[in-house]
Each structure stands twice: as C-alpha cells, then as structure tokens.
Length: 426
Ligand SMILES: *[C@@H]1O[C@H](CO)[C@@H](O)[C@H](O)[C@H]1NC(C)=O
Ligand SMILES: *[C@@H]1O[C@H](CO)[C@@H](O)[C@H](O)[C@H]1NC(C)=O
Ligand SMILES: *[C@@H]1O[C@H](CO)[C@@H](O)[C@H](O)[C@H]1NC(C)=O
Ligand SMILES: *[C@@H]1O[C@H](CO)[C@@H](O)[C@H](O)[C@H]1NC(C)=O
Ligand SMILES: *[C@@H]1O[C@H](CO)[C@@H](O)[C@H](O)[C@H]1NC(C)=O
Image (cartoon, rainbow, N blue to C red; front, top):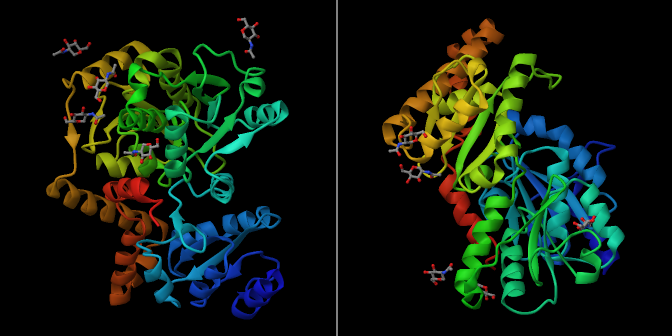
C-alpha cells in the first residue's frame, strides 16, 4: 500500500526545484488525496508578491516536516484552476492542511514556526495526551501557548473541552493530563477536573461557574474563554494574524512603531511600546477581558486602518466588532501609563471620539487611500516603472490584481468567523 502510494506520488507529481522538498501538485491531486495521508499545500499564483515572499519560508517548512507524515506541496492556481475551485481558494497565497476528506485553511502569520506548528497540530488528535512529567516540562520550556485539561476524562467539562478542541484545532494546542503528572508543575487552586491556559510561564485557570450542568452554557462559556485567552499578552500584529486577533471580539490596543529591515526599533519608539506593554502586564485582571494588547512594526498596516499617515509612534485602538477606531491625539511621547489608562476607560464607557467603521463610504475611502499610498510607494521606488505601468492597460490590470492580492484586511472577518465555527463539518 505504502509503496503503491509512493509510486502514485512519483508518477503524478513532478518534483520541482532540485534540493527542495516541496512537491509541485497538478490537478491529479484530487485523486491522490483520496489515497489517504496528510498534506500541507500552498495555493499560489506566479504574479502574486506575497506568494513570492512565502517561497523561501515554504522550502524551510517542507524541510522541517520532511521526517513527519505530513507531505508539503504547492499548486499553481493559474495552471490548475480546477483545483483552486475545488478547494474554494479566494486569495493568494492560501495555505491548507488537507486530508482524504477534509481541509482546513491556515489563517496565522506566514512565518516558518507558526506554519510548522499549525501542521503539527493538525497532524495529531485534537487533544493530545501528556503522560510524563518531562513532556510537560518540555512543553512549558517551548514557550508555546497551550490549553490543558487535568483530571478524569469524562463528564461535562471533558466533553466541552474535547468538543472545542476539535473546532479550534487549527488555532491552538490542546492537551490532557492526569492529576499526578500535572501537579508536579501546577498548583491547583480549584478542584479537579480543571482547565488552564499556559502563557508566558504563568497558568490561568478557566473559571468554572455554577452552570456546569447546562452543557450549552458550558460550551459557550468555555469557547469564549478559550477565544479570549488564545493570544499572548502582547503579540506582534501583522497582516497575517490581524484577522485572527479580530476574532477575540475585544478592543485591540496597538502600539504602532516602525521596525527596520533588521527588526530593530528606534529607542524612543521602544520606550513607547514598553510603556503600553507595562499597562497590560500590570493590570491584566482589569483589562484582559475587554482589551487585547499588541504592537505593529509596519506602520503601513496601521495607516491603512486609520486612513492617514500619522507621525510615529502612535496608539491605535480598534473595535473588533464594528471596525471603528480610536486614536489618542496627545503627543504619544508625552503619554504615560496613567493617561493611557484614562483613555482606555473613556473607550470602555464609550465617551472617546470614534472614527472609521465599515460603512460603504469608509470602505470606498480606504480603497482610495490604499491605492494612492501604494502608487506613491511605487513612484518613489521606481518612477520609470510607474510610467511604464501607466502606459500599458496591463499595468492597470496588475495594479488591480495587486490590490486584490493585498486584499482589505478587515473585509474577511465575517467569513472567517463562519469558517471557525464550521470548519469541522464533513
Ligand atoms: C456542546 O458539547 C457537547 C459535548 O458535551 C456537544 O455534543 C455539543 O454539540 C456541544 N454543543 C454546542 C452548541 O456546541
Ligand atoms: C506550589 O505552591 C507552593 C507553596 O505556595 C510552592 O512552594 C511550590 O513551589 C508551588 N509549586 C509549583 C509547581 O508551582
Ligand atoms: C446560568 O445559565 C443561564 C442560562 O442558561 C444564565 O442566564 C445565568 O446567568 C447563568 N448563571 C451563571 C452564574 O453564570
Ligand atoms: C464596539 O462598538 C460597539 C458599538 O458602539 C459597542 O457595542 C461594543 O461594545 C464596542 N466594543 C467592542 C469590543 O466591540
Ligand atoms: C468615562 O471615563 C472617563 C475617564 O475615567 C471619565 O472621566 C468620564 O466621566 C466617564 N464618563 C461616563 C459617562 O461614565
């Protein structure tokens, strides 16, 4: 059987780029996947800039997963549009984990570690057992955010945890362990069974309320809690993960700074970012239910949300349900953690000024803003190219394609939520 599969793969699949472990898939893939096995597939188009940037990352991913059961492939959607429509590819690049009867879209940041973690999560069962204390200390040392259930694997709490882990498998790590193993590392403040999240070397327990006997209520409340807790306290926000962060349905508090190519940040911006971080680190209990903090290193992303080019650094607060935003007008370098806290309070009691949103006019203006800024970036980068671009109708086409490719980061929200809830459908 195995040999037959390998035969099939070598017959139907052309191995491209010598030295790379990435399999170039053709439309025969529809048949191949039915043979079983697990696939991590990148759907791309040759003209798409984001796809080109993913290329070296993808080779590394393939190399890292070479010894696992996950096979890594790519599909050129301009050559095999039937595959693109079979998997409902709506933008490039799209990364999917594919089994014989199911597929899951990756929504995170497109870096090597996150993509590999996604593949490893999907390749295992939704809840992975931890049976040895050493495995648990390894998990903690990996500095990875994870959820863990401790206790007998029966009863309503287990059912809900298991159920949610199945739905959330693409988005987080879920483990189960026994009291004996877990109590070596964790002091239990509640009775068992219990559920906790591990992040930044601290455990936070799921607050079990009195309604544990009502399964729907339990599902809902645990789902909400897991959704609230599944991000680090102060993550870096990128085009890749911003839609995921929006799923928390919290206010997103962002320190906008500028990172150079070596990923270093000027001193005064660093101070500002540290100040913002200190507010959530010191007041987690007060803010974390309503506010997700984070920082942005690419001002273009933030500018396209506020639709102006603001002087750096600045503080931006987004309402993830309405897409409205708030900007603090004071000089950010004068801003203290006290004035930030007052600002957050005014947002919370809805007395702070509100901008933007999702109305048609705002969307139109955002499109205009993005086109204008990307044009002026192209112009600054290469005036000759810009002239040539405008000389050709093709230039317009590629511009349109470019703006589709860098699709509006906020538009995909509702769809993605749908996916999150229905991903496991057969
Ligand atoms: C709640 O969890 C149970 C398992 O206890 C599962 O069968 C059920 O489908 C879940 N309900 C909802 C609304 O998700
Ligand atoms: C549990 O708490 C006790 C006393 O508060 C402390 O000495 C011990 O180190 C803690 N154990 C763990 C694993 O955190
Ligand atoms: C228990 O669940 C009901 C709805 O099922 C809800 O109205 C009530 O507030 C819940 N009680 C607690 C303590 O969470
Ligand atoms: C966003 O704005 C709406 C409408 O003003 C409000 O009801 C909601 O509480 C706000 N906050 C979040 C986090 O969505
Ligand atoms: C909202 O919060 C601000 C800052 O704490 C406070 O000054 C203001 O009185 C509050 N407004 C209302 C209507 O509660």
